Length: 100
Image (cartoon, rainbow, N blue to C red; front, side, top):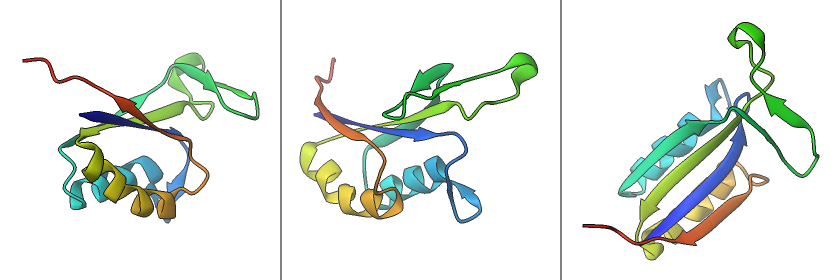
């Protein structure tokens, strides 16, 4: 079992649709067992610009992370389609253990 982590910004778009939505739909089309989108409170990337929620819930381009879980082969098979949608997005493949 593996976990695929994809790091995006809340304001990233694919056409008129949030990029995270397009990516989760693509993972679903590729038959990945499951994926969730997590909205971050605060974070920064390679540019070291800090992104955070602001007063009254107004966003300053908060971080978003997609977590997908499945067998390694299925996640790797989905990677080209994901890279096509977001070629610059950091993606990590981590070992995971399914607990019964």
